[in-house]
Length: 386
Image 1 (cartoon, rainbow, N blue to C red):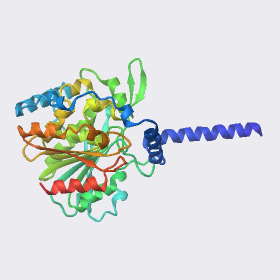
Image 2: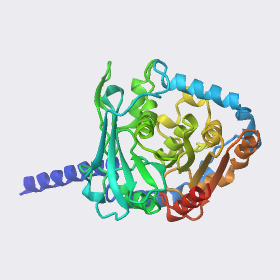
Image 3: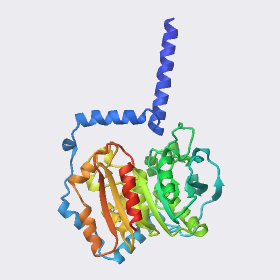
């Protein structure tokens, strides 16, 4: 009898531990509840004032920006491109390996404004793939929204069901307003694969964590390109086969970071909206704000720091970059921190001698890591004012 109880307890512990791993990796129920509970406990025990270790004077931030002209921007773009693609250069001519039209996905069949779904597959080094969906509305305004998910891009039906359903409501909002939507997940998330590779002297690992990428970084392979190439290469196909008048980009969290980087490198993106995506390096005193591998590569950000990337993403005739922060974001980059170091006017002043528009918007009182209705309405208002 006692042996049966011990075996039963061991089985329950094993199942609980296994499900805990699934919850943590795929952020399924009850991840959100546990995350919110953790933040409550964390905020009760560690005040933001006691954690704040920022020594950069806001008045000196302007000195960090080495962009004064169009030529400076072009120089930094070339240096960034040479870092990311040391052998092949910017992938102007690369195309997805697959482009399928009018695919069937029952998860979205009830969206009345949806005409059809097309898909694209981009293949990269180490067998990394990126799958994106293009949602076309029945009535179109000939404008494309590139929407990039963050690290929480898992299916609501569980870890074994991969789709873009988590953002179905956002997709439908854009379609209802006649925008086409091209949606991406981050490397290793959503429908993207997780290759198993062998690292010399370290063994085999699954590329299912962005922090694994530092193990394959060398003089010819820059893993940061896994975040950038899918959007650029898919846009190459979009330009060839479709007739959109303009491209815009929206992203949450890691997708917000991707939005900033893509808009800095590719001026085909007209307006960009990054939600809870990044802050300058000097503001990252809290470990929750430090970011994954891609957010803190020294060689990349010494070429162009975040302040300069913001300028590059906003620069150009009719171009605009807006950073949104949730005031009490439980994940990262809270608006409450930005309010202590409001760098917006510094970027805006530098753009006055260049060209382009930059703004920062705080979702007041927001305590979730989301694109809220408030933020979505702000994005629509901005797009419609163009």
